[in-house]
Length: 133
Image (cartoon, rainbow, N blue to C red):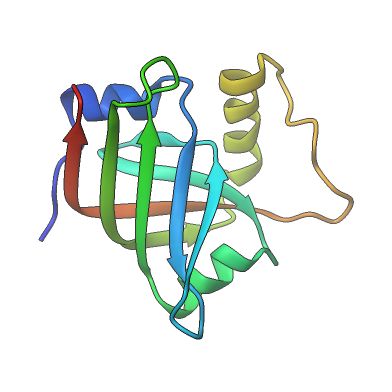
């Protein structure tokens, strides 16, 4: 069952707020990683590099929780539970540059490593919970 990201929840994702992405390791324990976040067509979108642990977790188990906290009011946040809709390389370099513009004010992502392959992870929301708005 899909849920909608709209209104204040969507604003929190569009604003310069960080996300925490929670995935499941192979042993069932939870891994949480901070990251930049975007929203496109009602789906949270994050960008990462191949080879990192949390994208590998999602390839094995597509369940994910994303929490985005308002940087100006830490008591306001949105929690989005869902599943991976897509992991793709297509458009990932352009997307990470757009995220660098949003978060750093720079036209290009400055932390790229040699040989790094960027990927976009799109998440299909199943449950959206807004707190403190």
